[in-house]
Length: 189
Image (tube, rainbow, N blue to C red):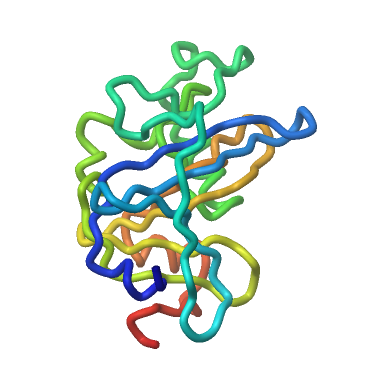
């Protein structure tokens, strides 16, 4: 499947397989299901011409993002969810968003940014309307959805930051505020 062929496809499921590397990095492999037919990864940016997306199979142990109970991230004994107060959550969200350029989703380690029952509607069963990427570094691109939300995939992050896995932006404005406006879009190619 060519990258430009994902435009118009619907995200019907997202699976993530979480792990650790070297005892200090959280890792995540994520698989995006399109139209209940194809499984892909969010491609990296920084390419030219027609880009072939590899079709994948969901690895055993990967958890459905839209499952009834989703373990978003590693369980952290040092930061149990019940003990994090609202002020600390807001401060940490803003800090991690500024430092790492991504907004973490609700996680077992206490970082909350979405209410799963309400906010999944912004990307569950949504249509991909564009693909956006930055050329300055070798990172994953972003699927722009018909809801205006963008999703990306972070492969690794320092343990406990809550950034490995699917990360979201609520709008292109939020993305450009954190990462700049020098992005490219597949629709412009």
